[in-house]
Image (cartoon, rainbow, N blue to C red):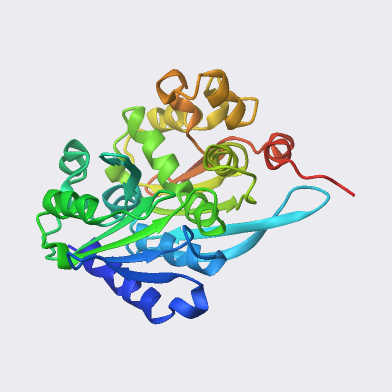
Length: 320
């Protein structure tokens, strides 16, 4: 079984080697933890975001830039392809670790989750273990973690602080926009899982997702970046599933348009909910469109559809 942390560390080291070109900064805390700042106090950029996405997916996906047609003009997009969707997305990329130490808060994703087992039931479900002695974590945060934060992360991962490697990327940054769009395949798999579907039957995946411009604060960018997946994310999955009729039911339920909160930019939905995630329908976090090919039967099903009008509203683009 591949080690997501070993794969992720290779990309982390490559990112350090190209720090100047990527416009990122390398920091070493007093406890030996290495940190890459990909947008907090430095500029970062598209290529930095690509590296962050590669680390999140443990380099088990081909991730490249493309364009997405929004009608009168095009915006940047990401194309994702992986033959290891469950390991890349659920064992590594899924942002399932809320890290809060005193005033610091960040969402943890990437390979280190497989050592901290956040959440444990997910790793039991997919049958994945990683016994690496080094941990690589991506933190979505607007602040650089200090030694106390790193100590807690290292303790949870059961590694020495000198063997902990962290990339920090704010939501309101170009790199942040890129790495969030790279979560398109994962968002679909997570929605499948929430519906009770056996995600271990998902064998291959592909997706194309627009990349949001930086539209304002972290909270505002959280809205526009999620809207890229919710309203224009197009995913393709290859599965091996015995009950084709049952599969059709799942495919129909996955897209975001099934949510009662569908129909307006996510920032507005979040604001109406008092910025309380628990008051937002979880079914909203899903791709706009999915297509599923069942290998054994040769049947292919699709559901959902893109909504460029809402994405344009979310981006707040003015035509001059």
